[in-house]
Length: 209
Image (tube, rainbow, N blue to C red):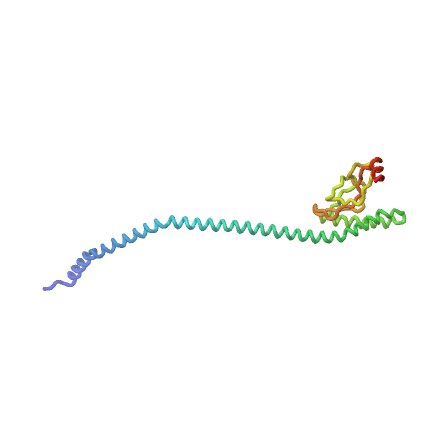
């Protein structure tokens, strides 16, 4: 009489469980473990070089960024300086054209001493003062000349006057005022300069010649 179906199923299951750990499965597991170990070794060997390379690239990018920022800052300062100089040149040109008007006011105020023109004089003085204050705000400065030692950078000698009242080379008169614009001579002052009188013997020798 043949075995029953349940008994056959138990026998087949027992045989199947015993054969699942065969030689082929063990070999496959070993090969996978070895490949994983080799891959891990390869990764661990390449990591320091990659890190160093990335750090070098990062430093190079930072250096490039710093240089670009410095270049942009220098460019910005240069542009601002050029714009300031252009504005100053425009104002300087305008002031040069206004100076003759200022000179005309000065001459009018110096020559008009008649009491009949007193009210007009006050008006001229007010207008002249307003013009000067506007120009001074832009950087115009009058050059000190009278009683100063002659300086060819600031003074233009029109006449030399022999005198014993002042030392040699002292400015004793101003024919036209001079001005500075932001520290640069816009117009030198036209002046008279004191010089020592020649001695009588020097004059006689020149006459004999």
